[in-house]
Image (cartoon, rainbow, N blue to C red; front, side, top):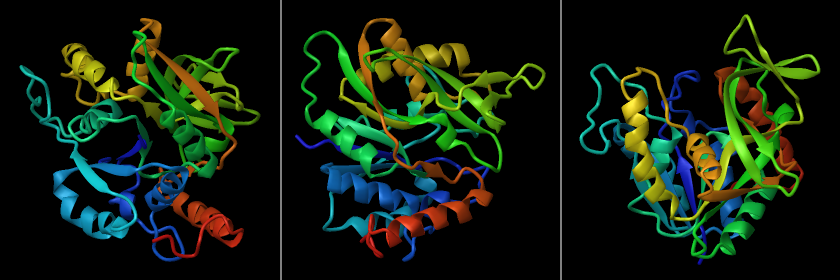
Length: 303
């Protein structure tokens, strides 16, 4: 069974300003996510599911989805603020999305096979998709009482932005390559020969530049969805009334590992990673993709 690629494309892009998921960065108007789909298809993924919002559905399907007709089957899931388990309802004034855990949950009705999860606005590189496709294609049923996941790990130094702080999941990895835990840090910046997490400006936390980080490139079996359904109400009970709280995928994976219900193999890659977190990041991304096209890694026109 070929794995499915789930693309989280419902982000509001508040720091970037605009619908960055369809913003052109390639020589023929390609968006970053077009390169991810291209890499995934040539690595062996058999379907793409985009998680989007209803308010830009028509624009997204016209500018993105139709590109892949005849290339790979495409389906959609919808991240909706009101998609909450009973008895929970949307708190008054809440406009911020519920996070990547909630976005991944939006695929529960359209994905039944092993799948990868990526951000629409991150460039992951060919090697990353090939490693994950190999892992997922070999994934069997979770019939030994434990869920078997994977995560592609990047070096922190290669994922920082020159234009502001970034959020990263810092990974604790065992000697045999298993993920032991993920610590979410939301204000990481480069500072000399190290990085600092400045959530507490008065007491920044230093992080080695060679630390492996999660860039939200995960490999899951469909058993994840049952865990999301069980855990989301518990998270809402504790955090649902906080105006800007978000439920991240690493929170769920971290809990499952610590409870002994899952293991997660870290697949280290030296693939180039870059993303458009801030509008000022775009010229760098355009330049890096141009270099890859010139080197023959990608064709001038993807689709």
